[in-house]
Amino acid sequence: MGADLGVSATGDLAVAAGDTRTQQRIVRRLCTNPGDYMFHPDYGAGLPAKIGQNADLPALRALIRTQVLMEDAVAKLPEPEVDLVQISTGFSITIRYTSADTRKPVTSALT
Image 1 (tube, rainbow, N blue to C red):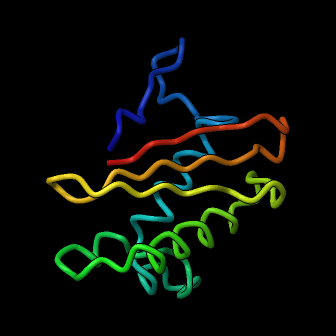
Image 2: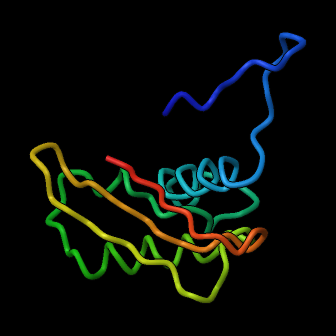
């Protein structure tokens, strides 16, 4: 999903690092349903399970923000910002946060 596989110089799968790794972890967290990981039953936002439900934008925004804050590589301050825009096929989500490692701002967009 999202062209997240790359090839290393030796032909192996490349390992994601830094902000790319954090962005991949956020997408996985948002797309994983709670209970899907046996040993971490509270992991995940379960966004795909919300397809077809009436959208409660403040609750959805809060859920995404809470899940993003659970990633160690996301700084707690300043708090992440989540923008939701309804589009014909669902929502466009833009997440802005500060990297806990580099202290630089990062923007990630999902549709």
